[in-house]
Length: 521
Image 1: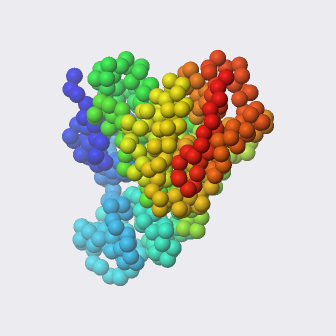
Image 2 (image 1 turned 120 degrees about the vertical axis):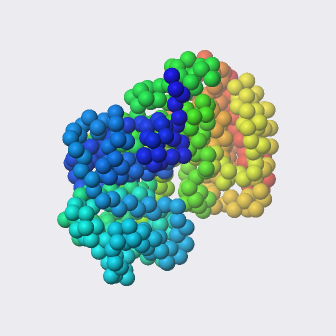
Image 3 (image 1 turned 90 degrees about the vertical axis):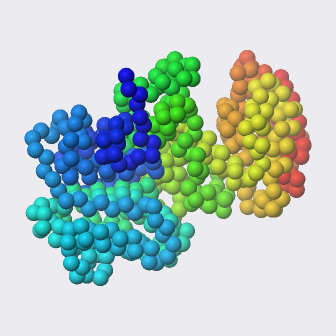
């Protein structure tokens, strides 16, 4: 059997099919899209297959049926396929740095279309030229036009921390997209994709017939890889991964699920795997953090660095669909942004309250977020993996004294310049401590709720439980007194594991653990 090839850096449908790369068949969704409507919007995280979806739709409308042989749409649509002229626009891959950047990029596409379809330029504005192109292409080709716009939000994302430029781009895009509504009678199909939904009402107010399928149950699996797809067409890659790593196939599937599954894009809670990471894992036959390796988006890093945001509260956030569905330069909500960029996903939906509970999709994302947050809070402090292993082993072996020593050494890496700003971050040490323990793979509960209060941290290993209280500019004695007076150890009294109570006093002056006290039962 020929070994599978995986399109980890290809997003062009024609290239994938002609060169024999694995293609996860999404054409059944495309058949439904083109049958049910005309104007669509789809929001999904980066590297989740949006560009490939647009490319596949483009090939379909161009009538390249030979590329679809054996795929779902080839069976679903019998007879001759009609061809349509396609205007394909991708707004990513451009540096949007000034007022002329967007119009220049749009102008490049308009120039190309005017040249390709031999259309005389009669208008100066991008809206006027776009209108004329749609009309003339439709008349010349004797059919309606297909318009595909990929990563519509790239200019807005680039300018979200520059209010004046953001407003300029929003107005320019509003005018450009308004053409689509005005020229509806000339359009056969139109789809826009993006990552972040910036005030859809204001950007697309002229396009009020746009069907947003971002939260639609029917299209929950239109991008990404579902469980059935992984076990189906990608099974040879899973078998190879298992063989190379000395795992059973069941173990390989379990590890892939733990690291890359867990995305939910609708109330149906259909499990979706990160396609980029899965395909990379198949191509390299190993489990790694592929999708998160490039770090947090610039805007997220900036938000976390400048605001006293409770990173521990992200996992388990409860929000409305309206909050998830909108973002603007005036309301840059961290939860919405984390969700839209793929760092949080839907974990539960309550029909009665119509509220969503969000959380990290999988281990790759959790490590990616916490590792990057830790890098922002304690830059250059980790002598990375070796220190992490030592911290984990100290707690696993029941050596809290050694753990504190390693923690002290870790925190001593905080630059003095950053320590002078710690007053901004009321939850600074809690966040650092939470990130450290979560990254080393331990079972940690933050703000553990008891009948008499909230424990800062509870850490569980196979043989030990650690009840930990942190005091900023307080003493270990103060921390231990709170543990005892509020009976924080009581919930674990019947647990067979050995219990340690650990009080830590953090000093803003030294930037590390100033005092500690350990008691065991």
